[in-house]
Amino acid sequence: MDTDFERITLGGIEILKVVEVRGPFGPPADLFPGIDDVWQAHEKWLAPDFQDPDSGQVLAAVQAWVVRSEGRTIVVDPGVGNGRERPGTPHFSGLDTDFLDRLTRAGVRPEDVDVVVNTHIHGDHVGWNTRDEKGSWVPTFPHATYLIPRADHDFFSPDGPARTAHDNHRFLFADSIAPVVAAGQAVLWEDSHRIDAHLTLEPAPGHTPGSSVLRLTAGADRAVFVGDLLHSPAQFLAPTCSSAMCVNPAESAASRVRVLQRAADEHELVIPAHFPGPGAAEIRREGSGFSVSRWRG
Image (cartoon, rainbow, N blue to C red; front, side, top):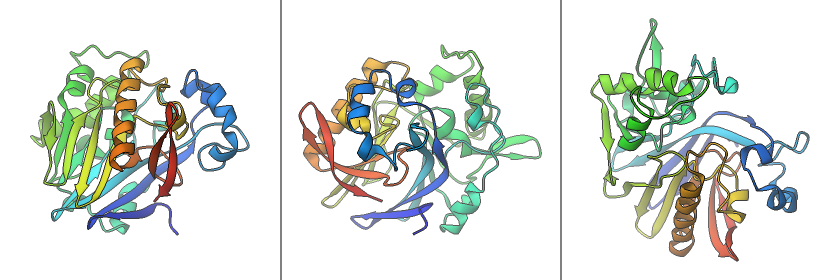
């Protein structure tokens, strides 16, 4: 099986995973402060899909999810993009991947995309919003509406409060957000946003101020695209443990617990942004955390 093009079908709605990059992203203790005991207790099942057995580093993927619903094509969290300047995250700087070719081989041409969802504004979720055309950043998906949480737009904008030592936020806003706003293709949503009868965006703040989840309802089937509420399945076991990338770790933990409780109780398939290997999970409550009853995708 080509793991770059894995498909799940829920209630007649097709969900397609298209991988941009995958690999080791750092030691568990650096990425998830306070998770050491839980991680060490479960290393045997975290490797080899979610932990590199040689280096011990966390394995993760940057990938987009494509959803086909009501005759429209929706791209969720379109990765890092090529040719980006990201001083604070060198492994995302200057990428040159064939991601758009992979999309096309999977049957998704940029001109056919109707909606792009950024669950939040971080460099690995907004990069392919745009592409370089003769030295200028232009929308990659020329006919798409880009759905961007207003809270994140305002936080990461040049006049907003977000600051990093390496200016990552300034660069990513300039190359991946401002061009789609200037093109008139952005919708800055607040509170919640219904895409169609099956898909709704809802706030889940903490990782960033505007972090959101995308809920899918199709007949008896349910799913929730959780973005960066989760970076590793170890967080199912320790749901109050937030990543080092979270702007507000306590708020992120509260959002994570709330979303996972609903997913377990209402049998929603959990679809995180960065799980390599199996990309989606059916979960159940177990003690103070959650366990995976079945992997999908």
